[in-house]
Length: 441
Image (tube, rainbow, N blue to C red):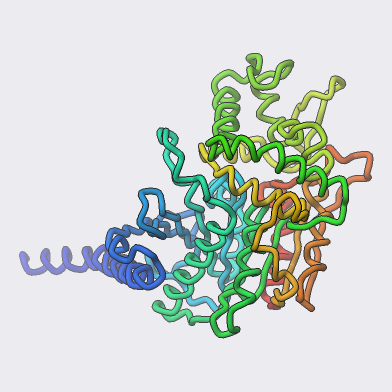
């Protein structure tokens, strides 16, 4: 009887033991690859991967890796994948790296609602999805000395994106998924960082390149619209003195987080951020009237907004057309407290495209970028304005997908910058075409 009981306990313990062994094997692979691609190999020994279920048999693995010697020289890595069992992903032949934009890290940008998200949708369809948290999103809100951020610009994030790609490819090779090149998706600022990375990678031998296709989402690096180019020059010249005086980070994420907190705790109270709005209306304005948060005439596009909205007779926001309000709140809640001012200056310098004002090195070889490209835009965000940058590339396989749901007079109700990932109808309008392109490339 005792032997039988021991056998029962042994077999009950087998799944837990196997799960632990698979986790250890994954950690070993990550640690080994990290030690090869990181600038601080010894710190790779401290990596502790975490796992959580997102939906059904779709899991997310996440961990942080060092990319330098400094306290904050760390990036986050995520993997969203279909599993056969815990810590045992299905075999995949196609892999995608996703790069977020301003304010929000990978989870906040792409997994605000895990049940309804592009990474989970792609994973369900056999794509191995990876993501990066750029280092500035991981800096604690309690940090007071931000001098280390002085030169944290687009080139730094592009370099770290290269580390993330190398690690993802190395882990895939170590776990028998092959060592092939990956696709890269960059949303918003992440798209600009993607262009910067490919600009640099285009100067490497083909055998050392890591990206085989690029999906820039709702962004431009260059513009042929003179008003927008001049606006970027004005933004650059207006922001440069603050950076020169020692303000090396902005607090836009903290502002959005404050708006979220007030909307949740006192939705009907008067907004201290937007006079004349309630706290809930201010939260909605972050989505449907994003252009209000730019100096007049200096936004990236006319009436630029994250989410198409509805408005009352006084032009105050009343709701959202495509994205659930709960998803917008989840996005706002995930705001990072700091973002480097240098990064925004770099982007404006590239948009300005006037070397007498500023010059950046990461746009010197756009014509040498030859990978296939799928540009995706929403006409309430950057929309078709992002197509021009793709015409400057050396790529011969360029496709554009623009979501255009409203007449020109209905711009405020148009599909927005974040609707691409949050909208209830995003799967049919955007995600399925992205999947089709991935499967054909």
